Length: 127
Figure (cartoon, one colour):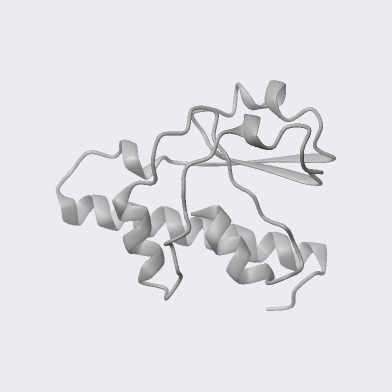
């Protein structure tokens, strides 16, 4: 979610990449809640960090998954700055489909708000 939201927010200001430690697939509800905002998710796919290490310059590594935050310092020592924004993993939430959808929306909105605040702090964007 963070990748798509930051791309929308920053436009051409940043090259945005997203990767996981153990990528599997993009959860269908991720596509759904991003599409609700009019965002195109057709190009989204799960990627691993090995795809990027040593291949791209990373100014900011933003860790959003609280489950893997303990492992990430070993993965991102090459980033100029590592930011830890642990959000609950909505895919781990158990409940009805409606409750799961609400959880995905909640986490989406939390990530979006944090990204807006961060970009504003950088002075790269004015809300």
